[in-house]
Image (cartoon, helix red, strand yellow):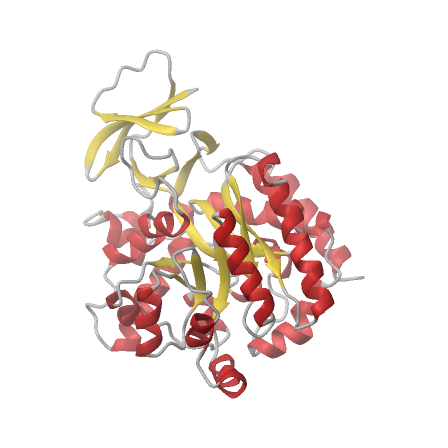
Length: 417
């Protein structure tokens, strides 16, 4: 299948983009239309799809539930008791809604960590988006639970090739306060043996750091270094409470970091030290976290919060400029996940979005990237292509009403159990 995007604005110039299979085959003016499916992009700009570096997709089921609470109170008394009741069907529908929301706001790939891997993978497969689906690992320092979690991870890994190649299996230990030292060592060894990404939370709260010092006499990053856990295949979310030494260590091991400003602000967890981490030559991506702590999956909105949050934290208006923030949500996200995308170039994966330049938030149009970061939200996205397949056009997605209706039913059932 070939798709020809005609007359779209690329870097301010009217351009055609030809997609063959799942790759961008040609970028030029006036490409011959014969034999291609045509998308008229007049009045629209062509951008790379956004990459959500940290999610718990099926937590769309928790939108609006347990708001305005402290993190550990929220987890222990609201989230974990209900999550214990989740079924694969619940996760499937929650993930379908997440994919719908992400597609409608221009995200073409997400890095996930949640329960019921099969339910997530099935939903992603059907929705056509790209995802790194983490087999969440929590043993609560119980040896029997650790063995169970290891066997579950091995079982998921064994069937990883039975799903779409858009879906990649990762290991997802929740955090150092929910996963034992022995399990972390096992996860690192398994990931290195099988060339897998590891996705975890690190230094999300001051309490996490204080507890780590009390228990291990070192800070979280230093603790993970002692375990031999750090490496270029590690993606850590939040990383708010880092000191200079920890940033230096992360840079030495080429660890990747994903910031989640809306969730951090909502839970009053703290402010991510964007400038210091960036100066440590660490690749930074952007994630939304789960809807239960955000409460949406709009990466356009998230980009604005990264930029404004850093300017406020540093009292420096030149910090975190729009061009760098947009790179975090596109090129950096692709680099973090090892994907050949994140920019509109020949030979790259055809993960693209078209944004409507007639939208008021993109007018008068002095600088598209500044407008995308500071002004727009996901509603400016008109068309989404992922892996060379058309997922949304004119903001229409097949089956949208059915997904929303089913999620409402599933949520009502889940919270009445």
